[in-house]
Length: 274
Image 1 (tube, rainbow, N blue to C red):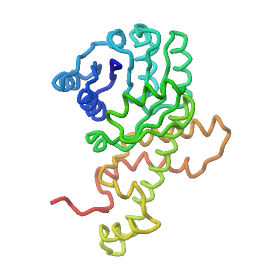
Image 2: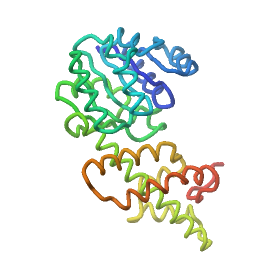
Image 3: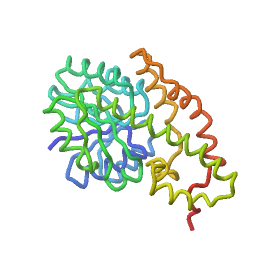
């Protein structure tokens, strides 16, 4: 059985720790927030002060940090896991980052005799609690199979999309469609509210029609917290490919204000919880 390390045990990482421990894995956690580490310890995980310390204990490391720079720091930096991981180990990138970031990390890992599993996750925190996340895998066949044995502890579905980088391509395009739909729901909601229609009743009708979307189904969970980062990744990909994507560019600008709108005065697509 793999000895598993998780770097970044926040809202998504802690449920992953819980499900891995239930499956009998030995788990070590690392996080810059002492409160998160204490929660992981209370669940039964070991803790490490640095990524390098974690790497010395593990054969399979999952990254759950937020940004490309953090992924590079906890892997390639002077206190990164690649300083201590044993050859043959795997670094699984479940952070949402640019495809080029995981490709460069894969090169760095191979130089140390290790492999990268490109493994961003979808669906969100409530699915994490239930162990029903979706993982989008990219990597060599043998690495994917090792990853499947670990990720099945907290994922009900795993989609293999190709080589390293393709998992992040899938996540970027998934998120592009999410934010296109979410911006549309703000604008459609404003129009609907102006007519006096019962918005939750309209939502029920739309969910049976061609206006249905996962964004509408999960409207209460949508926060736009990571939307700008997601859109920046997509546009970076578009610039590299020399593509003009005017709708994508417009959505990137619109999500800047959408977080404020959603937090303060969003369209009331769902009935207040009793």
